[in-house]
Image 1 (cartoon, rainbow, N blue to C red):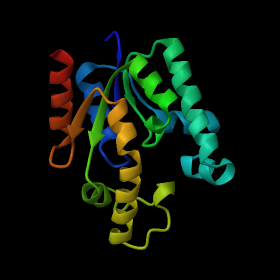
Image 2 (image 1 turned 90 degrees about the vertical axis):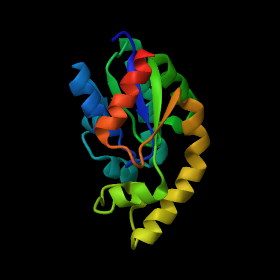
Image 3 (image 1 turned 180 degrees about the vertical axis):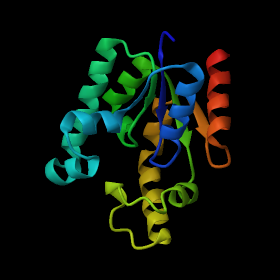
Image 4 (image 1 turned 45 degrees about the vertical axis):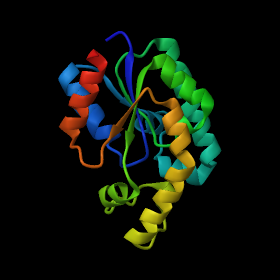
Length: 174
C-alpha cells in the first residue's frame, strides 16, 4: 500500500472492527487513533476528557495526524469519532489516503453501544431512548464534517464487518 485507508465516522459505526478486518485481509498495519493517544498520554480517553477537557484531546488528535503525515503512514487508520470535526484534521486525513466515512443511523449506533459505558460524550444517558436522542443530535452537528472529509461513504446499518471491508476493497481497486 502506498497510501493509507482512513476510516471515519461516529462512535459505534464500525471503524475499529472494519479496520481490523481490512488489516487482516491486506496484511497491513492497523492504527486506532484513540488507542494511540491513550498510549501516548498514559490514560484513557475518558480520563483525558475529565482531566484536561475536550479541546486538549482534539489538539492531541491533530498532533498525531501531523506526525503520521510526516512519517508517511500507509496502513489502515481508524479515527476517533470527533477527529474529522476540525477542517485541518480533514486535510491531514485526505493527505494520508482514501477516506471512507462509515455511516450509521442513531438507532443502529445506540443498539451497538447499548452496553458500552466508556464513551465520555454519552456518559449519564439514562436509557436507550436518551442515548439515541443524544447520538442523533451529535450526528446532526457532525454530518457535514464527516461528508466533507470523505472520499466514499459506506452505509454500515445493515452491512456486517466483512461486507463493509469487501466494499472498501472494491472501491480501492476501482
